Length: 477
Image (cartoon, rainbow, N blue to C red; front, side, top):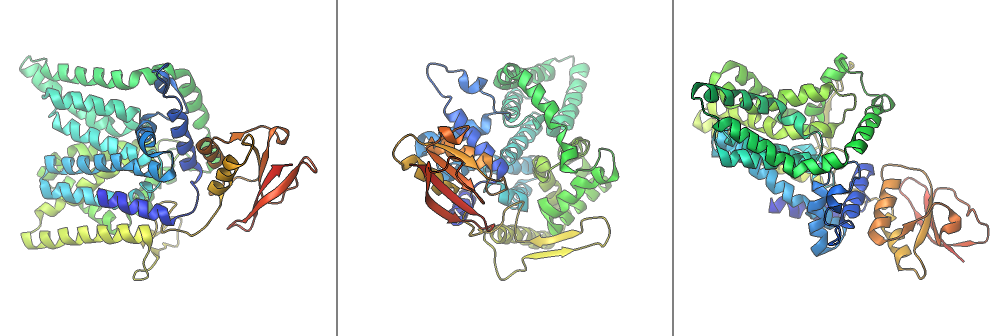
């Protein structure tokens, strides 16, 4: 965990690109929540609404309080969720199988391409994956809600999971139903209310943690949910219930989340679930999580590679557990090979290497997207790019200029230079983004630009951008 965090910060020190669209949005939201902490209004951090639930932002704000609001601090705060994910993945594998399966499952999950890249960014999907893994681990530990302490902890994990992202219930729905049904048997046979009481205690604890935020913001949540559901047509995604829609996350799992080698391990594990009763019994909860996740998100209009990340800890257990059936010698060799592959994959995806091909993909020649055997990149990002977009420099310079730091922005929106990023840097450096150039002491422009108030501004800095355009900073005379 420490090594992964240190390598992620090393990667960040070599990557000069600013945050992309979604990452910049979440960074900005973390600063908005930071500004809500006031002793005079202690409920404000719970009542504040920026569309996404606030738990990840709260964790980051604790780091901001001691280390400042630098981008590296936000990435460092991912260490909390890396630790949770490693602990929970290990716990699931150890509880269902043994210590070896637990350790190898944790390595498997943390070195998947999408997790390697996601923990180098500031997003909600990797933290959500950690919280879902923790929820599944604690659900297993409840032993169908026969144990009080794990049940209460499970409720707390669910409350925090719902405060991480509202899709949390999709992942644990089937495992929770199975555990709830299993709890009814002893309750009926022994006429004992203990399992139902523990289930009720879990529900109460979960509601006490997340209920206020959801109830206070229910109107805005309902409005935004209806607005968001209409974006699928705009994105050009397949229609629900079509073959393309049903297979969308199959190809996502193969070509973005795992790559071919780990995917084959998972397929073997799933086959054995249906061929060996002990594998089916031990892996029941992870398999239910995988199936429930796949069906729930395949039936959603909006789709993205990141949305099903939280099923990867369950995928990891299934992919590794079948190695228990191998002979000891073969099991030792395969364990070493899986661990070595994980280390090599993490380093190659993070920093690149000339010793391996950058991309090994086999196209099918049909409508399917082909098969990615390996690639030296994760989802969106890979090795450091060397591209400079100068957003940080511009807004830091505005903050250090004399006079009131007000600015107006003019220019196109793109992945590495966008209005979410402008909002983030303006919040970070306390530069006020105004509605018109007449109110601004500075103008930030991208592309061809002529100052709207002739003779009122002078160009003080000019930066060439990687896309061939220019970034200009103008100051009012």
